[in-house]
Image 1 (spheres, rainbow, N blue to C red):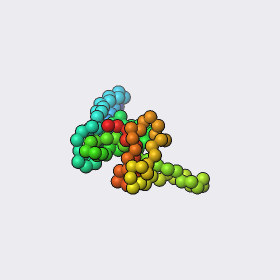
Image 2 (image 1 turned 180 degrees about the horizontal axis):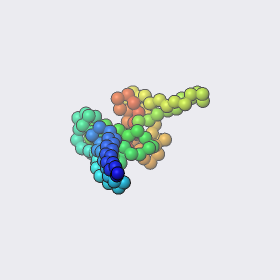
Image 3 (image 1 turned 30 degrees about the vertical axis):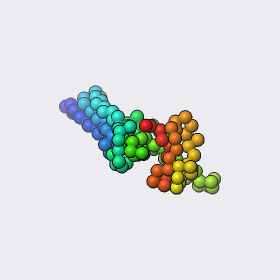
Image 4 (image 1 turned 90 degrees about the vertical axis):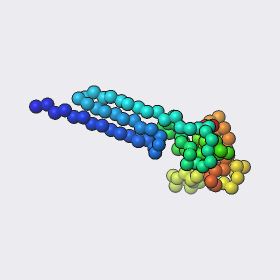
Length: 127
């Protein structure tokens, strides 16, 4: 007696960013993929209106988010510093009061500029 197994996996990467559906039927895998482009460069009035493009979400070099900066949606990378105590393996978000408090040199050519956003340093990396 043959058993047929159909399995559907739905992976949601982040709210509103798209989805990937993989269907396995009788041993054959079918992939349906949606790529989410985000809305970088669009006019905005708050961070809630900005969506991070899929291409940034899948990168492993930063926990990218989108933010409304000067009424334009941009992709930013939060800046971290590592605890000075060698016994502690922990990173902390770099806090700030103004843009001059932030140093994006560690991001190199990826950074289009440094901003103090909601009292946290971020590197602007997509405009």
